[in-house]
Image (cartoon, rainbow, N blue to C red; front, top):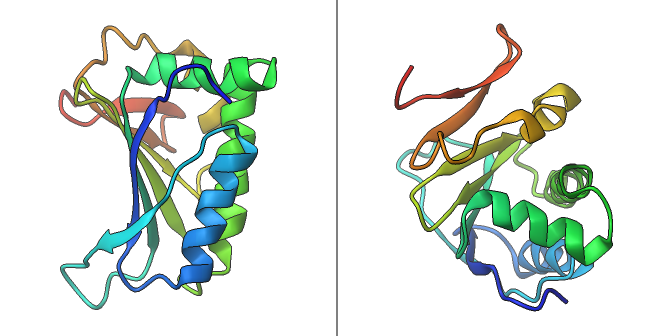
Length: 153
């Protein structure tokens, strides 16, 4: 277990079942974090089908990735990639198809990890200058093959 709790809150879509909530919690446990997710995200439209895991992180995102890596004693971003893919697999059973993990840190930085993005998106995370991107809204641009801060694009 990490020595400092870096996860503040984990929310998923309100219509998720108890089993789906437990699957999310289990992914966090395997990564070394004890959390209890909450099915509290309401959809603005019935047409919005993708699942969502919203994670409030109590430290800057770079420190979150370091905590995941320290727990496993391995490269932080490789472990984060495995954690995200584990979450994607766990959520696949939601019946909602594709979805996203939103990491939101204490500095207001948001990183969107989509279940449909290529491995290259995860492999490019170590190249990000987190200090420069503080407070940004980061998504992967498949056309350009790089992370984009949507707030300054």
